[in-house]
Image (cartoon, rainbow, N blue to C red; front, top):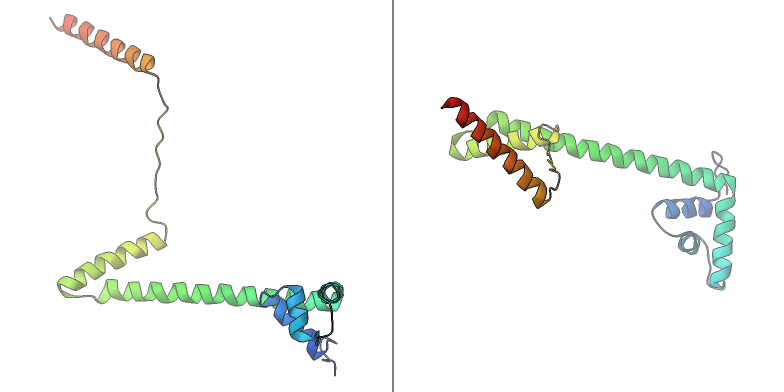
Length: 150
């Protein structure tokens, strides 16, 4: 019996869910259909044919988008939960151990909002001749300064 909303059979829906869960198309086909008498090449071909059906492809795409949204929502929820614990530690910790917890919480909160930025300073590589010339210039400037003082 086909689903009225999508016109997909239960087996087709199961195939779609398996694909979205990370199965290969062939493995999803094996999971959803009886393939005991089919050769691997036939399973592969049938799975490919099924995935080229616009209704199947659309359903897989919708399921994948829903899964992606759920992952993002879960990730944001976890992040907010951790930040709330850190804020609570920062505001309510007491005693010597509490002070250490407060400092660590403040440090982690600062990192979470990008307060600390790693700065990498690169200096150009100079040859020994360039360094020698710079030292000679500085020595000459120092000698000139000493002569003008005396």
